Amino acid sequence: MSFEKLSLIAPILRALETQGYHTPTPIQQQAIPVVLQKKDLLACAQTGTGKTAAFSIPILQLLYQEKQTAQAPDRHIKTLILTPTRELAIQIAENVRDYGAHTGLKHLVIFGGVSAQTQIQALRNSPDILIATPGRLLDLWQQGHINLRNIRQFVLDEADRMLDMGFIHDVKRVITKLPEKRQTLFFSATMPAEIAGLANSILTNPVKVAVTPVSSTAEKVEQRLYHVDKSAKRSLLVHVLKDASITSALVFTRTKHGADRVAKELNKSQISASAIHGDKSQNARQRALTDFKSGRIRVLVATDIAARGIDVDNLEYVINYEIPNVPETYVHRIGRTGRAGASGIALSFCEEEEVPYVKDITKLIAQEIPVVKDHPFPASQAAIAIKPAPAVQMRQSSSQQISAKKRNNKPKWHSRPGNRQQQN
Image (tube, rainbow, N blue to C red):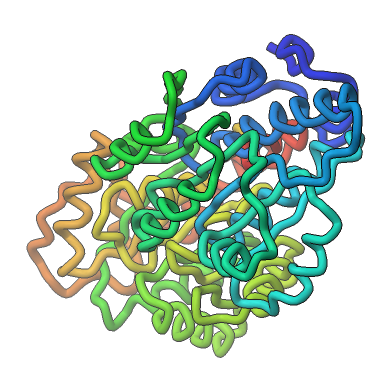
């Protein structure tokens, strides 16, 4: 199926052509017609499935068509997109800018961590679409700078992450400020009971769409597990990244301080790295992300919350420096590589206390994670109760095997520039 078959208008098709987008992803194929029909939508979709385009493209079309037939200019905010993190808000704003390049529609992104004055001034330009994080949105609403009474479309993105981050009460407050008659689009990677209850309370006869179940891992992602003592994790990470053929890696830690320590250790070992987490200023976070995307640094060390909204073309490696204690988080992490039909590699460093987490992960994904036995920093614990997959009795060193695998796959993951919409 092509985008033309989704009944999209010429200005948007032209923008998609410019961006190199030709074939809609499954979530886009299912969601775009629903949104264009002005129906409510309940979508269970992970990051990396193309969900940003799935809601922003049809919204831009609806607003453009409304603008073309309007008797007089409408200077109110018409669409609100609510998202949990600054990085994700910026990413959505970039997508809205790209897809709406030929529509004449205006958008604005607002979030905390920076001065509100510039955002207040920008609100006077009457944006059609507002992309916001909950805290700053409520602050500016309380000050009288934002009017939400004319919202036609409300998008709640990453609803489960809103719950994880403690924003669910702010979200409910925002919803009380919206007009009762509106179109609501609800996106969540998982559907815990509280999120399902919220969806039921704000949606009216929604069309339900689900793609890429949370238990599934990216088909093209090669997974590897290293058993290592906690004290040797940094040494193992340096050893793996000494392979110069690894040009980009996203490393996950559990804590902000851990991210800083790992980034510092890598830089001491002449491996360019930056940390990104909630304690960093917005400018520092954006600078680190820009440097990583441009290739000025090889490694970005992130916490799970800060990593939401990080979309990098052809990201080669995801490294779980610390194993997450929530199995679904593992799936989200490794899904940041192997996107848009590309290949990717996910490495996980497991200390003794994290073995139960790996068991939960393998149960969720219904497959064993192959164990790398031949590396310089094996765990001292003799009885680690995870069986290696039969095909992973490695004779080469781990870095040699990874390099060989990468050389074999490299043409595949560098040859799909036309499918970047799957990463939004």
